[in-house]
Length: 321
Image 1: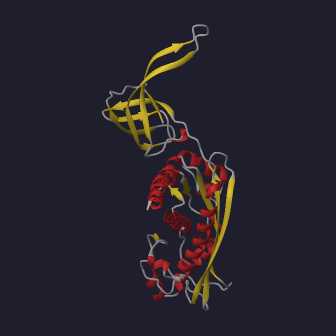
Image 2: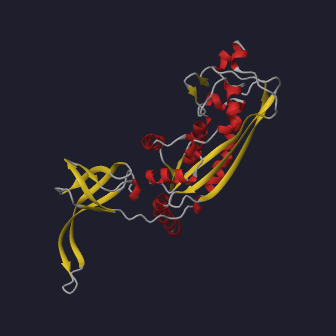
Image 3: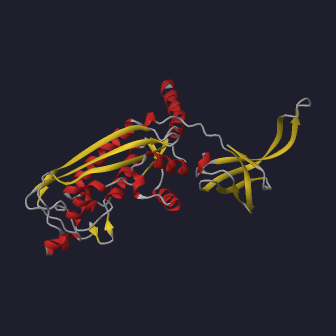
């Protein structure tokens, strides 16, 4: 009985530590320039399958629990603010810069190298297949039955050095074959004019969706195995209060300095300085703790949050982790 209790206590103590040890990553949209002709043939129009692959990979990584994955909204906001182009999807230096702004340990970039049929027959576009195109919203049918094949590669980038720490390749092939890659599960909602939802069950049930899932699962499993390659980052947050409005505070340190949403920082008031009488060098500073600041929003150079404590907080007060 004592042994069982000891095991339970140990598990309870280790769980928080393991959660804290998770490395934070972000996943950029995959580049799909090399398969654009295939996309046009399959869907009858261009579709951002790079975003679709990235979204599915994010879901797989979140479900496995090895990484802490940044949410899509935060990534899209940074990409819009910094005006990063599609070419930055595959450039390690640009990806590392994005990762630093987001405050993540690593960033995953990748490319789609194969997306379509397992043969070289030319597909018939949606406009040529009449009523069948209406069933799928976007057409795509080959001259004979074929399996779907999807191949992708991904790289894990160190955001501090832009070094490629790990690479993974995944290839998926459907078990079924059909006259259309969107067959066996396709419907008008699978790929409507507003865009293709590759995360939907409807797309996942198609033979193309089956191949996509296998390729992404393969890459996700390899990335999980490489998590230890990301070095531990020791972040020391030390800044000043830049603005105070009621209980809301803005500080002069942002994601570039390691601040991230959810951080809890001490707010300090610097008091008397003790100096070396011989050199005038400050030996120590007397500080009093005013309270705690919980970070709720972060940009590259600043962060905002909600203060709780005895206060009042003033511009120039110190914040630290």
